[in-house]
Image 1 (cartoon, rainbow, N blue to C red):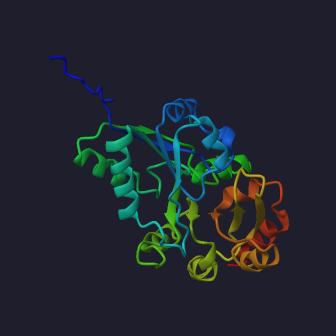
Image 2 (cartoon, rainbow, N blue to C red):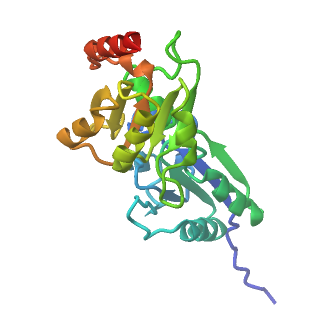
Length: 265
């Protein structure tokens, strides 16, 4: 008696978190490209440049799981469930996240849930917008006597409020990068004004590194007006600090008035 055997393809679940960078598809790492080329499924976020999906095989399943500030269509719990289900049923899942997976991107949470299912995981860092976007604008995080350190702070925490860390950061002389804060610019600038920093240079960069990039440079006192004038909206990051004075668009007259005020006191 001959038994008919049905050969089943073995699925080997695997999850790779890939940082897609700030927006320009050319800023994806080579290792990220290699991961996408072997993906069975790609779960990608709202701020990921969709041109990166072309690196994945034609037969790969590509699923948008993005959420913006006012959109809860894809909760983190749902994203976690999709990631696990697809890995167990299809094999290699690439979780493509904007920026770097571990900078305000809940990357650790996704790795933790994957490992709770004993699914092998890999992390491929990306260029964080917090560092890469100011750098592309010739704004260093640290430079000479202008700044010896930097903070990266969320403008809006999980409770929808300004992070308490920002109040502490505003007291320092460090460069301060605020992510997800442009909608709260009035409240944020009020924090700096309370510290006597109305003339502190500020840069606001919308859609950094992309073809839709929009930049305004000013000081704490006037930056809200400039944001309205230039119609800057989210996604945008804020850079506070003396290093912003190095930006080509910064008006040196602001520094002059700032020095005069300091001498008066």
